[in-house]
Length: 193
Figure 1 (cartoon, rainbow, N blue to C red):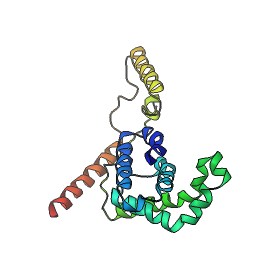
Figure 2 (figure 1 turned 90 degrees about the horizontal axis):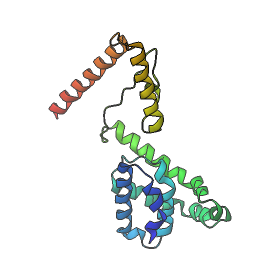
Figure 3 (figure 1 turned 180 degrees about the horizontal axis):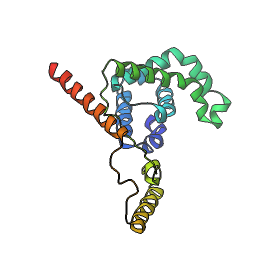
Figure 4 (figure 1 turned 90 degrees about the vertical axis):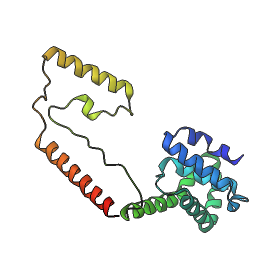
């Protein structure tokens, strides 16, 4: 029943975040601490889901959530039982922002200690003259991305040459060398373990 509070919010998430928060919701429902405060737990969760990273283990996330509710219960209830909350549930953010900060701080701490695995950083290159496809994100606006590709292909057909056909720049060479060095160093460190 309490899960209905977060259904729409979870449905609007990308798959990886959706899976993470569905697992968190299942874990919350099976936790004995959930029994008498389901509305508060899921209301806080609904408010923080869009802005919360998913790097922490689900057990640690759930513990942080319950600790936050325990130590901030009067402030949370003060907001949830106020007139502004009835008209705009987002006023809960005045309290829940502190939980988001705690989760982010804990995630960064674990990342610095090497306890969180992340993918290699993405490399985005801009060269001159730039193309629309260099500055547009296909995930943000797929239609504009396709239009940019069509404009670029049309320009290449009309000009019969790619305007950046001169090869890799020095910056690209340096970036590739640094990435290769980093991957080699990581591989050596992994072998030592």
